Length: 311
Ligand SMILES: Cc1cc2nc3c(=O)[nH]c(=O)nc-3n(C[C@H](O)[C@H](O)[C@H](O)COP(=O)(O)OP(=O)(O)OC[C@H]3O[C@@H](n4cnc5c(N)ncnc54)[C@H](O)[C@@H]3O)c2cc1C
Image 1 (cartoon, helix red, strand yellow):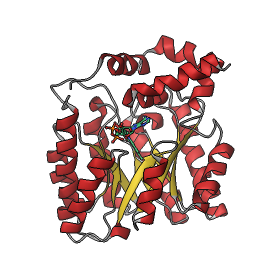
Image 2: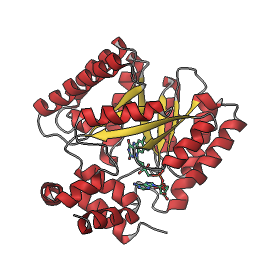
Image 3: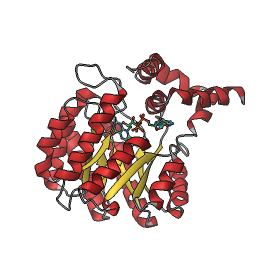
C-alpha cells in the first residue's frame, strides 16, 4: 500500500506553521498528547524515568523542538542538554540523550552546530554518558552524516540514527562502517518523495531487515552499538533471528521504542534477555513531533477524538 491519505495529511500538517501555532492551544489536543509524553517539563520526564527504571528499562531523553531560527535559541538548547546530562548523572539514572541538529542551529550555521555538539559531547564524556543524533528530513541527511563523521572521529560516545525508508541509506552505511559507528536503525518518520524514499511499507520493511542484518555482519568493532528502534514486532522477530545467525549476543542488541507505544512488546523483549531503551520526549514544542506520531498510526486519531468528547 502506498502512503494513505490520512497519513499524508497528518505529515503535511506536521510541517504547517499555522497549525503549529493554533492547534496546541486547544485543551483537547493537549490532553491527547499525554498518551505519548509524560509531560512538558523535565520533572515529568524524570518521573517517567524512575518508573521505567524500576521495571528494568533504560531510557533516552529528547527535548522537543526543531528548526530553531536563532543561534541564541540553539545555545539555550545546548545549555539545557548539558544540564540534563548533569542531572541524569546526579540521579544515577540509566538514561542517555538524543538530539536534533536543527534544534542546535543546523539551518543557520553548521559550524556553530558542530561546536555546540562538541560541548554537549564533552559534557557527556565527563559524566560517562552517550549522545544519540536523530536524523531528520532528507535535506538534512548529507549534512548530518558529515557532522557525525567529524564528531565520531573525536568522540567514542556518539551514535547516529539511520532511516530504512531512504534509498541512500545502504550506501551511507557502507561509508560509515570504517568509523566504528553506533547506529540506531528506524523506518523513518517524515514525508519524503519517491525520488529519495521507498513509499510502500513492504519495501521499507525489506530494507530495514537488510540493513539490520548488515549492522550485525559489519559492525563487529566492540565500540559500535546497535539499536533497533521499531514497534513492529514481526520485523523484530526477523531481526532477532538475523542477530542470532551472526552470533550477536542478546545483551549487545538493544531495542528502542517510544514512550507509551508497544508496552507489552517492551516487557516481552526484556524477559527474553534483550536490552530495551524507551525514548521519552518532553518540552512545549511538541506539535510537529506529535503529528508524526499520529501519522504513524492514524488510528491514534481516536485518542484525539476521545479527548474531545470527554472534555
Ligand atoms: C527510539 C526511536 C527513535 C527514533 N528516532 C527517529 C529519528 O531520529 N528519525 C526518524 O525519522 N524517525 C525516528 N523514529 C521514528 C521511526 O522512524 C518511525 O516513524 C516509528 O518508530 C514508527 O515506525 P515502526 O518501526 O514502529 O513501524 P510501523 O510500521 O510504523 O509500526 C509498527 C506497529 O507499531 C505500532 N506503532 C507504531 N507507531 C505507533 C504510534 N505512533 N502509535 C501507536 N502505535 C504505533 C503499531 O501497532 C504499528 O502497527 C524513532 C523511533 C524510535 C522508537
